[in-house]
Length: 222
Image 1 (cartoon, rainbow, N blue to C red):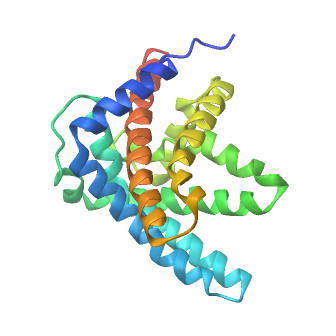
Image 2: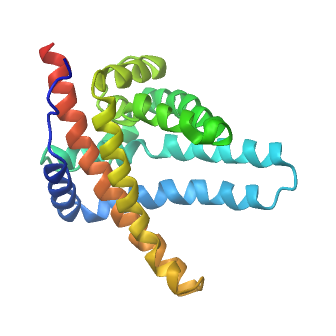
Image 3: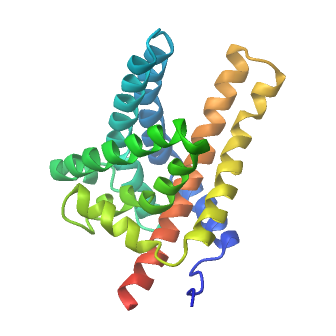
């Protein structure tokens, strides 16, 4: 029997918006740092004539961006829990960054390879099973990167279909940031899309932090 889902989607969105609104500066700064790291490597990959070289640069960029995103996940957890954001807290634990690096490598390798085969289905599977790893690491709820991936898998047990539906809705929500590009690709519309993306992605990260807490509580009760 599939267990009841612990958090309604409307409540996720509400908490995500409220949490972001109360912590705009730290969350936006962490999001910008993450996007900037990947943007550098994506730009470099776009100039490569070798497909393998482009994939390698994309993977390195995603892996490093995923590692840099650790404070973003930590701030999102603070926001979701209605606690003051501790901006320096995540920076004081080097072991968490190592764990995040390990998780980011395996996660993004699976996503990138999955995106090239079987219509991207393996990428969706990777996201459904391992998508909570950043929160697990930031929450120090597991020892080491591989253990964090395993904990992420357990959090979604018997709820994959519901998680897929929620993930799809949040993907659509983040695509709204691209609306300015519908008026043409200019410096202004690109800047507008980036700014909107920082907002929608930060709301999403806080909303998923709320879901992470709800699933973690359910896992602890089992």
